[in-house]
Length: 355
Ligand code: ADP
Ligand code: MG
Image (cartoon, rainbow, N blue to C red; front, side):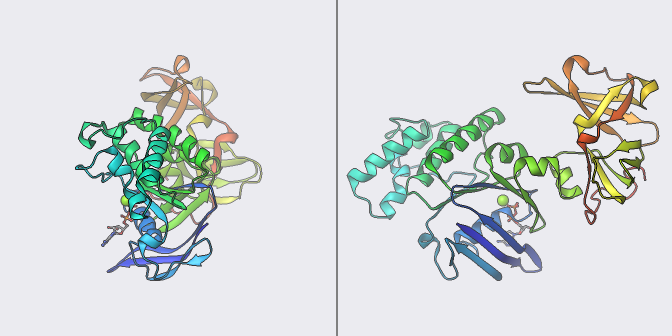
């Protein structure tokens, strides 16, 4: 459906997109994830035709979009700040794209009613925009973007301005809605939780390049680089000498999954793989803090400081979480250990990991 073939965008001396290649299949939901400034918005703008590209091609349904103006591309774009028309009522906003396409009044009214139902705002046609909550405005903006049936819907930080609980709720609704409608979606977010909840596939951007593409599970299980691992919130990354089934690390011997590449590598231990035992049975550590993460598993993130090695984050259930100041031992489970592929460069300052 959408294909980016070596798309490059430069602003003066800055390369915002650097030979980006990616594809979005029909009915697929793809989330572009990355820190601020990594080129996410530029990517959407290039696809929409709002940003000229310096090299490469954007293809929609196999057709090169070079020279095709934005309104002829049949893509819907929704920005973070919704940009609803404050002087029009809800129906006037939702009907906007339909009017542009020359739909008659009765057809417009039927379509507006249909999409207000879909986004959970039945009968809201005559309400003024100013009377709506943030979440309701979000739904109206979504109905407006969806009503003309764009072949590709692009969302730029669509839930960015909403509070967390509303976002978590809406993201699940959105996924269901896109599934029912069969909408093809390219969405941008800097929030990995949001991306993982919404997407069939995620693209992690780093400095205008695609650092990794894969299903949320693949990216979570096997981050392609230290950058991706850290962006996903994993902090337990150190240098290691990987041998057969075990690696030498500043934390001592750490078991590694079978088939891991040997030699000098960066090594990630997901917090779930840091198992708490007695001081006698593992790497001795002091508990320096705990953070209740909540969720169905009542997970607690436990910060641990070994004597002469970098800090470690462990994840455990609330009843098992030790108190701050406690002395514990740490053992490692190979299932949550990832030897990061060579060429993934450290992003922390040299020496910060104690090596
Ligand atoms: P993101 O959406 O991931 O935060 P952007 O795509 O907005 O990133 O920006 C990528 C890079 O391009 C940034 O360094 C940004 O400053 C730069 N950039 C974006 N738009 C422009 C512009 N119109 N003029 C100059 N630089 C820009
Ligand atoms: Mg942006």
